[in-house]
Length: 414
Ligand code: SF4
Image (cartoon, rainbow, N blue to C red; front, side, top):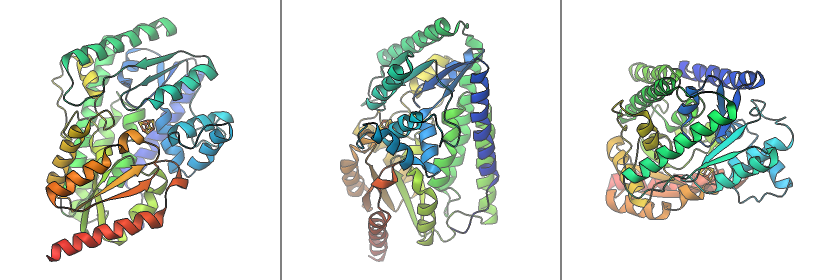
């Protein structure tokens, strides 16, 4: 990849993220009720209150890793006794709090009044947020979300909605503020519009060569986590999609001589984005899609946009709690990945076995075999950790990726 001039969307993203963190600190300092949430918690409900703000420790941890301070923050937690086997997001977050967020690019997150986790992405996150509950002496609301092997059942949806309503009642009680359904509904609409534009952007990866690389989609998913329920989502993703369309016309593509179209499975290796994208580009390889970013705005077994009928916002956000990969059993993961491979014309798959995120990685060996057997395309497994650079070897990873590209070449010759 040639040296990149920052794109319009890139500049807009920086602006949004800086403003987002500044607003969060400022409002909390002025007395807003502050909630820390796991990424899967429906943040749109906070817009239903006059003065409730939220922070996302996982997103903050990813930012720390992307800025090169993931290991530093992990070590602070390890020095207080936490095991290296724990998810690096948890170690970064806990480590960051040991010294008042002094190394954080965003000065950390403002102290919460409440933490909210869920248990369908992983069980670890509830234990992690329990640390905050104990250390800061604040309440912890755990959403018990059923794991899914098939489309969400009606009884599961009702169970999730009842918990969302309980959470709203709890916030009313703790904050003394009244929940406004109309404002909440409006926020859900904004998130839905954001998902539509996001999908418009990702769809452009069908083009050959592709104006989309997963490295851009990794970076640009951040507003989904920290600015859910706001109109800036739609605006930002429209800028992103429009710019990608323009880049097709001008030939300003992420991989100029795209020879290999790859698919990525697992969380982004935040500490490697620049290096990895550059090295792949020099090899003519473009990771055009990733399960991690394709699953936003979708539900079980497909990466196609889950269309909202604009009726009941509670139903919609309950469905969206199944948006991510980790809560899905093997069949659902296989079916969504199969659809993406067909649609994007994928030549090979990189399964990133993530030392931190065991729930994401657990089915990968079987998926690798199924994908290769069904499509006859090669796939490799590389070892990564999404935020702890000590658990990644560039040479080992690229040795396997090199072998993947050679296999694609030899298959083309035959
Ligand atoms: S283990 Fe995976 S799902 Fe759990 S907190 Fe870490 S990254 Fe998220």
